[in-house]
Length: 143
Image 1 (cartoon, one colour):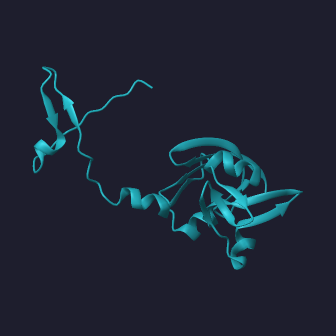
Image 2 (image 1 turned 135 degrees about the vertical axis):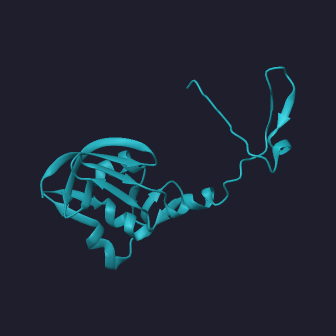
Image 3 (image 1 turned 30 degrees about the horizontal axis):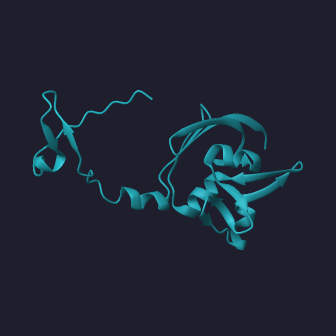
């Protein structure tokens, strides 16, 4: 398995790094795992802050490898374990990782929260005033 430059898109953040690709599997160095995903290996599993996914002993060899003195993490196998979708463009060495199970709860409701804003004349309008009607919201931010 040879190292190549690849781009990992995780949580809609693109990170370019050295990866190993083998039969459709994406291996990232354990040192680059945090940089690409904000996950890190801990004794209790693969963790991001308080959130930890334990690695079953039967799957550790599928997800973790030691090669040439470096630890490698199979990000595609981890995504399969989480039922997270993965899209891969082999020609450009891109991997896109979809929504994780912990993020799906946030998307369970597509209902926007109610808010109140003034129009151009200063009259206040709430989103709830338009309940049952089609609303087109345009937002913009300068940051």
